[in-house]
Length: 229
Ligand code: T5A
Image: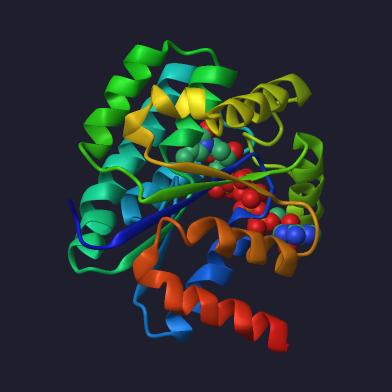
């Protein structure tokens, strides 16, 4: 077991993961808790190069190659950034992790689950998130939020059926039955991502507190600051 905490944000496109991850990091840092905010794919020099290949709108990469590129980015990130940060007792706030692979490559692309999970295990070893927060919105609402920014990247333009399968996968991952069969994922909580950024943040803090006792003073302080605004 590593001494730090690994808090993962997951969910479909545009549900507000990055916005809330930044918010959480800022709240923890205000209480002198050292945090590293990382993203997948990316977060290392190799990972960012892979991200550029994967998200380039006109790219041609086969589904198995796509899965292995996500895994290569992950393996590098785990070794180069996540494990050292956790070993130092610090917090990693991670924008997407292997639940995204389960949703996009296994459920939506239809790649064989055992092979993909085995490759994922090669990338992460015995690393299990402290807690994964799945932000949930109807899939089109997230795509609309994401599309307002600057057009769609490769994965975002894959069509309604693909994104409906992604959304259905995340709906399944938050159920107790699914989690009982996937100990490698650690605990997963579902948070309603509708409403304002402040409202969603408050729900996230409440969802985190049972799993992050060492951060609760900071999290309670963040909520008090919210009320005082
Ligand atoms: N992928 C990834 C795989 O297929 N397999 C894998 O194993 C992994 C790891 C990564 C892509 O790769 C795929 C999944 C993805 O398709 P990405 O850009 O990292 O791409 O992930 P996205 O989900 O596409 O990231 P987005 O930035 O689009 O979405 P976020 O982070 O969920 O949303 P965020 O915070 O950027 O917000 C989107 C917009 O909504 C606004 C924000 O200001 C922003 O403009 N917003 C709100 N608006 C109203 N109310 C709120 N409460 C709002 N919160 C945020």
